Image (cartoon, rainbow, N blue to C red):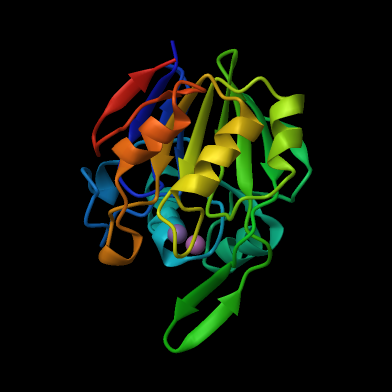
Length: 228
Ligand code: NI
Ligand code: MN
């Protein structure tokens, strides 16, 4: 049994009962977060891109858990420069078989800069993740606009769950995310990256209605957990 827990914005934890993964662990300063970074117990930290609302607490959680950071090469290297020894750099189109299962990096149409002290560290291309764990396949799209190759992702993977941004402004809005569902054909879909702040205010019920049964849309609140 695979458990998927939502911590607000784009942060999800996945557990197969043995291995624990956390994706885009922005907890400190996340108004939606239901947990504190210091309470996270994990083996792997997957980060889609360098923006603060995704990279978030990755360094702190990696240090306190002695966990591995899986990220695009430039971002993984940046983590090394910040004192993280256990990094696993990857890049778009590449997959790797970890002890818990397989991770493949997908395209994502977005930026990847990390902002600190009036400086932007440009950390390469952002990505999405296709994660195969516990005989299930989960797609975390990261931050992205709609792109036609989502159709290819849907053709080449049998997705049990898609985690899709719907917030608009920085990422797909509702109508584009509905088209993404048509391309990806996931059994279940969880909308993310909305209502964290005013700029990305959206009604997830509207998304659910527009998907209209093409996938089972599950609206998760921070702290909610689903089983796959
Ligand atoms: Ni972003
Ligand atoms: Mn974001």
